[in-house]
Image (cartoon, rainbow, N blue to C red; front, side):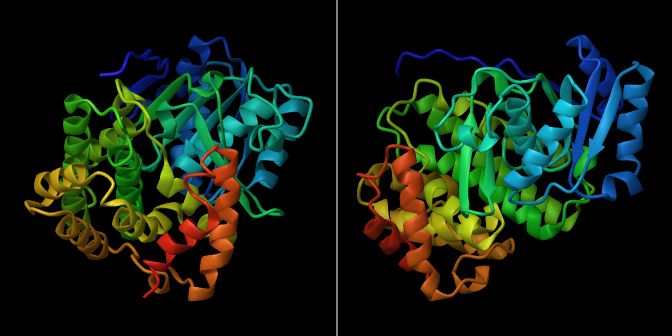
Length: 383
């Protein structure tokens, strides 16, 4: 096990009805005014917005509201929100939604403390040194954004889907009420499951130093996701399954799976971010296409790790069988596994590879992932 420092300051409030306490949670951090950020107007129809604003009113916290955050969130909405925050001198952000809203909130929080263009943080022109407090109320489990300091946003003009991060972007408090996730559609449940798999398997198949504890933790997260997804596909209202799925999602990217690990990378995300930035493919759907293809391309680099995965997850004895079973499971839950199923033509390979190479350079991985290698991986998913 590698030496490590573990730091995660986010307070999780997990359980039924906890969103009604968001005013108190914000007040605990001395916040007197907030931007309520959300995606769909559905939260007004189902009463969630009303519960949130009533809680803020109860604690004397003033607020401005801004909706319209979309899946694959965009920088124009972030810029719009930064303007609202600055013009109204808002002290914090309450993000109500899934990972797209939480990621946008982090970018807005950083932009609120910065005199330049918020996109500077995404392209390495500026470093996030300060941010206003972020509070999240999650309505979708997938990205783990509720308990980590990272966010991903797309620049519509340049078609770049890039990330930002920094210690000040950890949410102060995140509410995880599984009841709020009961209306997630089957396709987005599938995409969420795939996203969790990718967070875990990028690490599982690349880390050079990989403690047994971490391997077993990841395998438990993945088993939990498979088991609960099966339950939720049949009964979306099953609270216990929804709760376990939600916590597995959080645990997959809150730092626990990185403890004692060294020399790992987020390879599939380099490629999928390009796919999403260019063609607006939902993140989990893009990962379902990329992940099996990437696994096929690297299976000989760590054969023992792939054999372990096949045996632990599917009771199979070799790498190819494990990859095939994973691909079958993605298909069974309704996720696309080929370009065609994701609505992409074969001629999308080269544009995605070129775009992804730009991300690889930004992440210092251009030697490992030259454009031609990325194209070869993508071709494995063209059928």
